[in-house]
Image 1 (cartoon, rainbow, N blue to C red):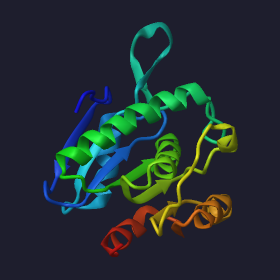
Image 2 (image 1 turned 180 degrees about the vertical axis):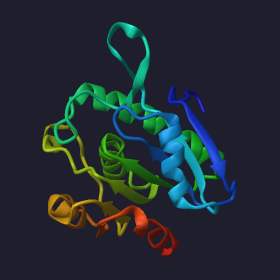
Image 3 (image 1 turned 90 degrees about the vertical axis):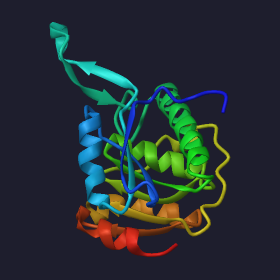
Image 4 (image 1 turned 180 degrees about the horizontal axis):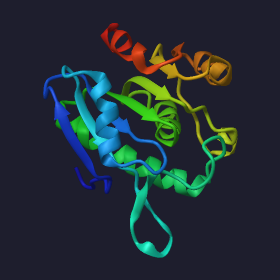
Length: 196
């Protein structure tokens, strides 16, 4: 391995369990990602990941939280999103190598969910399954210079308002994923227990 991601991460859970990268929402923290990861259960290998950019509280210097890209979730600024995706790709490669080339699940919330969605679209050969809460595909996805491979039946759990998630589910399904929409995170244990 020649380069390593600059993203800060903490691993916990079962070392031999199904691995998941857990991405917090805008202005979240590593602790927020760890709390999200707890929903995956003790049998999963949970890798909490902190966003690459720090938001401070004005001139106080106090950290408000971390974020993945500039702009709203439905229209991220592409260069900052690209930076986050690059660092996440390095982390995927690093963990895939460490785990014996196993595919890794992604679980993202809010802005972390947008990053998880785009990551799964770009590198489906490295992603086992996808869980996304309160996030949709960016409206400017077609502005991104991407050649998207098929998702080959990738299981996807979209959590949130069914009406708001319908277009994202339709897009993922049209690209070969197997999307499911659930109202709450209570659906996660059943989703991760289902074999691919």
